Length: 138
Image 1 (cartoon, helix red, strand yellow):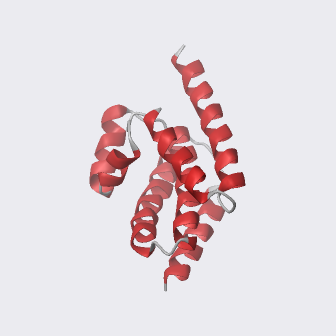
Image 2 (cartoon, rainbow, N blue to C red):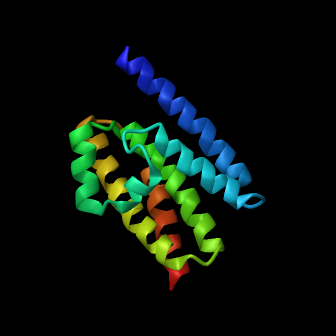
């Protein structure tokens, strides 16, 4: 039962991700609201709570709540989209905070995948995208 729920949740997050990607240029406010709404369906409960956590607190929360790395992977994809939107809006301080969280999450997910002996082709492109965001802030 728990596995079915997790898969269902990941599928729903994927649908939201597609909607955010399609709306991020034409309707950035709607895309940001969709991202915010996603967090209400996670153990974080609100985007504001997620945003308030530093990397150490985030790791402790993830471990305490036993958040699966596949859920974190989809949330990371959403955070990349948020960073793109915020960059376009000139919100550089927010983008820097997002970069820090994304960097932590990409590393954490890679470690969890290695422990589970899962090979993901996403980590390389995510690291490249992270580097692009860093370069864009300079």
